[in-house]
Image (cartoon, rainbow, N blue to C red):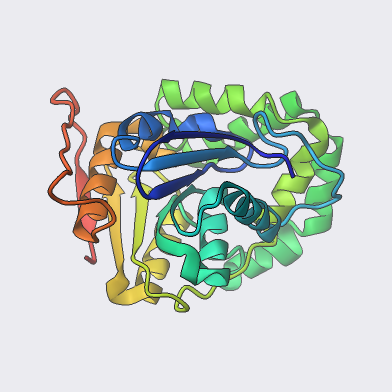
Length: 289
């Protein structure tokens, strides 16, 4: 698969993986900052952004994961620190579980552990909104119709705070508008079929971040993931931020990542300096470190 990607900076590799239906532009503020310390690799997954669609009838999380692994091989990258948002966090878990020797650390943002983590979720995914209904629905919608329905349902169930500030909402809208109609159901299939990954296979550190205004499901899954990885994991919750908390509160998000990278020796503590905008009033809450 011919993935569109960008590389900037030098040093250890930081792989940034975006969420479903958006693209690598969601990492704009992270690319600008972390290229001081990393060789930052941001990628548009197949069917997203500038990467073309493919002939596959369905996508799965491992489809995207294997694409990224092949790209790493092509670029001669042996080991990465992976930062994934939403669907990207699923892909990060897949890579860490399947190829732990190639992972330096993982950052899970707005993360889901499985679409069938408990009884309620199993009922929803098998009885209330099974795969065949989702595939039929998304197969009939245009991208514009999909965007309208998705934003309305999200607003109705979770409110605009989940969607983030006006800049983040506009970024998401413009990204979804680029997704071809034929890719809508393929991408959703990857999310719908995601199951638990074994993060016990490696000794890499795990950072879990969620926005204060993210859904209760995300907060519950974040707590679950923190318990699963135990002392290897850290969990932060960013105030005044929604699902894409990296874009809502970039200064706070970058500070959390920066300090975590420094603490675990992923970047050199002696060279690490962080300047956070004094105008940023957002705070973060540390849990379970």
